Amino acid sequence: MRVHVVSDVHGNSTALARAGDGADALICLGDLVLFLDYADHSRGIFPELFGVENADRIVALRTARRFDDARALARSLWHGMDRDSAIEGAVRKQYSELFAAFPAPTYATYGNVDIPRLWPEFAQEGTTVLDGERAEIGGLVFGFVGGGLPSPMRTPYEVSEEEYAAKVAALGEVDVLCSHIPPDVPELCYDTVARRFERGSSVLLDAIRATRPRYALFGHVHQPLARRMRIGGTECVNVGHFASTGTPWVLEW
Image (tube, rainbow, N blue to C red; front, side, top):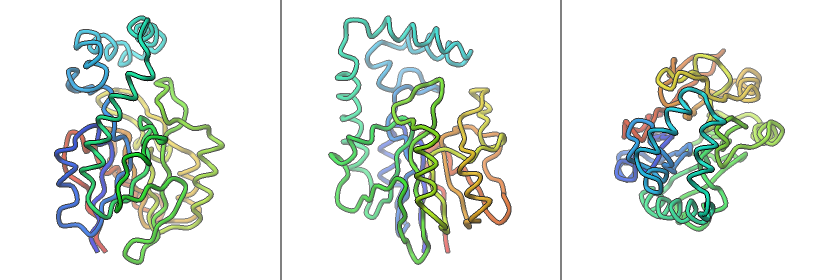
């Protein structure tokens, strides 16, 4: 059995269309939407609406962790515009291309920048969406936990600690634990390019220690200090920033 795993697709529908080649199934760990490309500030919803110069400005503020100033800049740019309508229209356009690129079968969960309420509109036959749910693939049990935890970035699908813990608890024991964010381990959460710690989950870490899945797979941190680490008997793997690599991580058994 061969499964390809991707995360942080961020608009790369061209590579996504090839991500399942040679695999029995594709797993996607979320962040389909590209709001702003930190490597190329001309790409994404934000520069489409406000231009590259403003994208440069907001990236500089966020990188300096001046989040209040970044939010003030964003408020000034959105003034007089229907923010929700503009974003939803752009997201729908991206989702139309991205969901069409999924092969069958695909098992997918949400990232922190995704908008879950829109997914049923675009998920086609052959795409199974799971969040706090399990699926059997090739004789192994996979558990899926989508979204992120509250952060200064205030991304669209951040849930409370309590809600996230309930989703993890609902999985029970699984062979492969799939989440968007990593367990709360410093080496797995630190982004070496953004030079900051992203939110990880202590509940995920506790579940790994308690239930000892074979693998814990995740994304979210684009340039992690450590891409993989063993915790007890569990191999923890950041499957990679698919938007930039275009290459899925391969799991075979």
